[in-house]
Length: 165
Length: 279
Image (cartoon, rainbow over the protein chains, first blue to last red):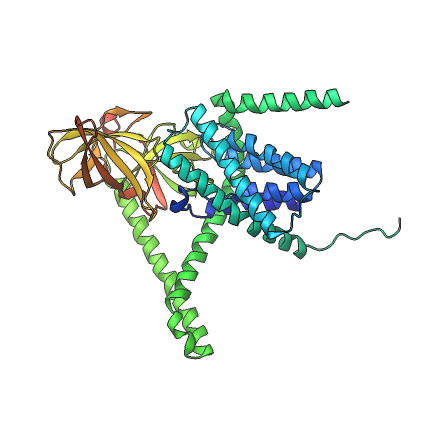
């Protein structure tokens, strides 16, 4: 439940944040970072819930057809879920690298979907600016989102366990 | 078991690919309508809280110099400043609303006033979302204007919300003319500058036409890519003029003023005066 609330809040935050003209007028990929966070820390079922909710929100609130997030988020989720035992997910360097990779991958998929389906005009300069920009934005977004989610979860009352039973 | 899993994965992937690349407009809009309808109240609340926060921050920043004086005085000053800022905000809101009301009353078009609920989620599109939709009579491909001029056109309308494609978006094309010289051209959005200012370009202007910096650009009333805009709506002023590489045309950079800073209220033209709309 908390995970769903966090993802919904993430969608609102992403909408309220201003676009960065220096990075192709893109916004920080808060939802992609939230998906990556949960894929690295939760089990398979939770990962799929996070992926599906975030993808539907991102694509539903975006003009055009459903698509970019519906393709990119599951790929990010599956990959992160697979490698989570082999990496140190709390390490800042890991987070910076994964954040940049996730941002770049999302932008690449979005660019492909929009170009192939003819929904957006393609311009090489802007495309390159957006690919690089999304990597930089992802770089900073994942560590910030991770810290925020961990802090929110720490604020929540702990669930009581049932002792030895 | 493994085979079943593979079949499920293959089915899921095919479903996603079909949803992405074979978009059925009615189905897509229904899905999006559900998501946007569910998120609209939260968006509205969040954007009003954000607005208040920005105003308060600006108020506190404005009196940064008083910090060193003394704590009590600072708190008092902060409170008074915030109050004053709030009052200024109310006054500005009042003026803006009055201007919008006068604009609606004097405009020859039939218009539906709408509030802006939120902006685009990813930055790939230059769009804003309005808090009214099909249920309020808004349809696709209608002009959206404000007292400052042309804002864009309605792109997707769901029962409760409408997506507006701004003039500065590269996918938005508007048939336009230079008011002084009566020369026609096509406006195409070019995104935003490094300072975040929306930009557009007027293309296919006759190479022999005399264009001056500061010339007013208005809608021509001719139909253009995906919609028809009412005639004579202000778009912006010419900032720079260039010769096309081919030498056959000129093009001019313009700043669509109505999309700068944007905007609490806009109007969707439900029927243009030159379409037989009556007021």
